[in-house]
Length: 574
View: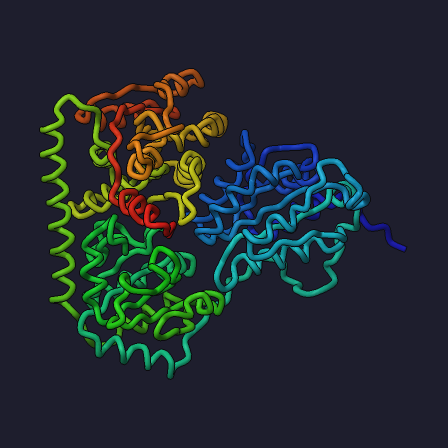
């Protein structure tokens, strides 16, 4: 009998990931992880070690959002618990990440094994697929299953639990390879093409509409349909609004782009949507951001048609007037040939956007003049940061009010022709602390670009020390702190909710964030005046080091937080 080379289960796992084309693994190296880390070293899979497993998860998430290709977050059993918040953030954006746990020993299952937790059950509500590998010969099979689940239909994260005794045990190196699939590489995910009759029915309704609009969700991005969406909108003169909390699908300077479909964050979306007679929700979900498909967001007189590439999304969008199973890009290509355009309706929405920008500019100038000598307005901060950036640069933002003010600034700068290479921000679940890892992901993938993060002080406290990985990996990002001295989004809500009009348990001391980064070996600078921000950002970028520009700002409630406070006071948390 011919001797067969035997390798550890961890090496089988590493080889299976290599065959799928995994180009980055993010981890906090632990003893339970060592067999697979050895395999990854032998396979020459780049591994980035982080100071915390939540950071590893956010790094994998940022990498996946940019590349649209699964990355791996690899942790030990106790590290799995730390990675759960990153799972929740990935859930909101449907990032197809492979979360892999080297879990407690299978041999002593349910007997109090070292660091034993039921990671499979904990992960299950947060991912598409959570399973424990119980046979080392099936590791490759489970990697293939997980990859297929993550990337098919409505994408999403998956979780594999590989017990440590399987990681360390030896198996024939061809274990499980006698079965199909014989090609173990990554396959392109299947796309759903629309049924011709159903497509014709939807296109006929669009053609007959007088005031149609598009609301685009994140599945447009995951399916690679953003260019087809923009081309169709340009050709037909259709206004496009983004579903709040999801990835941008075109530049803010793109002509069809109007802003978020959010009546508070971007008020011109309200007349557009409420006056429309037909709304195409392409690649989106009728969740809380769209009032679950109900009035007053969508009036009864407005027909709502949802176009989604998976049955899972269509089932979620049950309230729509009509559903179409179709890859978003395929639908947009068909839409482009509809043979009609809406130039007057389109121009009206662009005029509304322009008037909104001018109103904000005038109001901000008047407030700045009135508040001479006061701390920087957070909208001024976001505007000045972008004025220091160019079309090859990435903007990342993280925080509560900081996030929302930056969204407004991005739209304003875009209207004036500003361009960026890309943007990342927390998804619908708004997990604070993902900003620095997202910025690292962008810099790691686009090293020739400048990457600037605008972070709230609370968000930086939640995940800012992960900037150490920037030093370790040679990733010079520039972090601009919106330092208002506390959890301002919460303080502002409390002051409107509490009977005494005060806030409680939300203040920070005066934290020298710039000195912290200097202490690590980076560049730091304190800024107290609006007119000094752009130059300071440029100096941070020019330093070639991880940099922190600590800007003293005043607390100003954002429109969305003001609206949320009012709604919550009326006993609705949506």
